Image 1 (cartoon, one colour):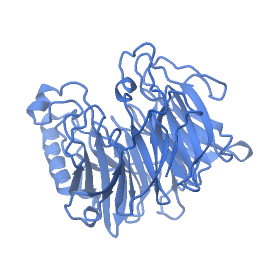
Image 2 (cartoon, rainbow, N blue to C red; image 1 turned 90 degrees about the vertical axis):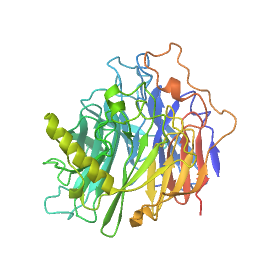
Image 3 (cartoon, rainbow, N blue to C red; image 1 turned 30 degrees about the horizontal axis):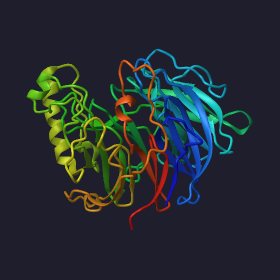
Image 4 (tube, rainbow, N blue to C red; image 1 turned 180 degrees about the horizontal axis):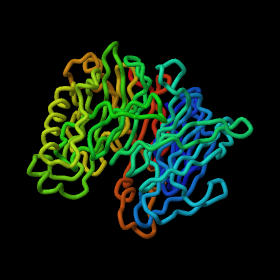
Length: 449
């Protein structure tokens, strides 16, 4: 329906994740500088560029990893939350005065009440081992549960430490500010999904746990109080470096609750010999396999984990066996790409997802966007979701690829951004699929009927 090349707005910067709320689309600028592009998508078939917000620049010499890949919008689209990530202690630099200072790892609160002039409203530094990877805002409403503490909160992945919870509070002159509440500690986190559960009338935090596990479920009805771990799901708890739990989404059907989670696949050397002996695969990150998207029945959280065995080896093995068995029982269906194509290093890997009705909209780097019909699986049937449409955007290069003058010690973008398309993220909105090509531009597609 439309393609914006963004040649006038960007040079060789790499685009990241995106969100759409209140007819505003926000697309993160991931590397070599953090920031956000804002678009008017009131008519999603004709998106219109509005403005660019600039933040700090990535370090890039030790590791060329994203420094601002994730952006989330408030429910009304008037406030944006930019996650600022620095993977090393070497600071980046600030290219202009709009940013708060040298690469503050944490969350930048951006005022988008005038989307033509986005402005920094607040910065919340968050202690982490490399910055904040994702931040999601969520509103806990009045009357949800007797112990609920209503308000708008932000759940941020503090790399290496867990999930940092902050509260959105009134600021000066009608603005807003962020106040740190607590840290929910855990070893590995990549992404989160927060839902006011219509079944239990609780607020649940779902965590895609990277290489550490599959997913966790925490009760955050009172975000400042106790946050008990309600469940854990992991098909291969005996493996340390196989599937990387990436994004997570949840839907309900009557009294049934379904979790969808794709694994991001890559190749970073060989798995440990002991893991290979366990049948965990040969490549660290399982990039030699076709990437799965799992659909899990989580209707009864007590029938999943948790299986936290501590440091006792015998107890750990026994509880891992229980977790594995329960996880296998809860698995409803698995999707992999129709060709069974191995993912490689992020090349054909599942990435971000969105459930809309009975459909799952899935981005996949070089494999573009795939639309899946999961109606049978969401009815509890062990049926692989069926492809109802896909698009792999192609065409002449519209923007230059990012090439660093001095190669980094640990390359990431240098390995991943060598060809188009690179669809990091997409959002279904008003019957259209809006997608950002990391090294291309901004697309609008009509969704399949």
